[in-house]
Length: 183
Image (cartoon, rainbow, N blue to C red):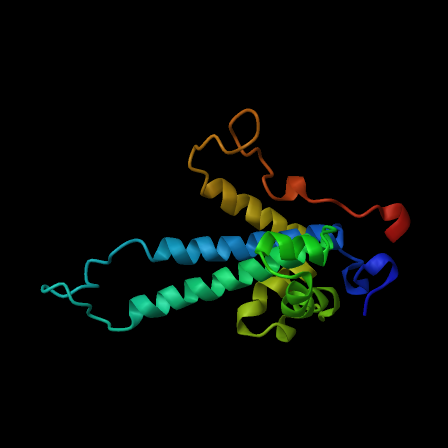
């Protein structure tokens, strides 16, 4: 159930707006995808037999399937983030190259789930620990992502004008609730 202005009443304790929480959830999905993809790069010393065949048939495919599932979660989280950030179904459809009605049919349940889901670890299943963590501890989750980004910073010039990401590359960009109107 949503409260005034579409805000999730269960998120009232969060220092962030629903749109910022959705962006935070999307950031975590991106982190998960990056970690899974990064794990697929190295070839372990004992992964292949001397003839080049795999020692553990199915393990590479299983890892790739995990990456694909994570990519789908990121994709869905991106749509939810865009919706809570104000994007219309028309815009989402245009970006995805599909009709607005098709976009809505495909992603409306994910948006509703984000807005209405209970904020407990047991409500998210095995893969949903992060969603519960983000919902219950959004500031801590954002700070964890700050640390992750900074640990993985590779020196690219993709950061701010000074060429760095700054001390708070995730938490620093999240919009906070106005405590005067949201308690």
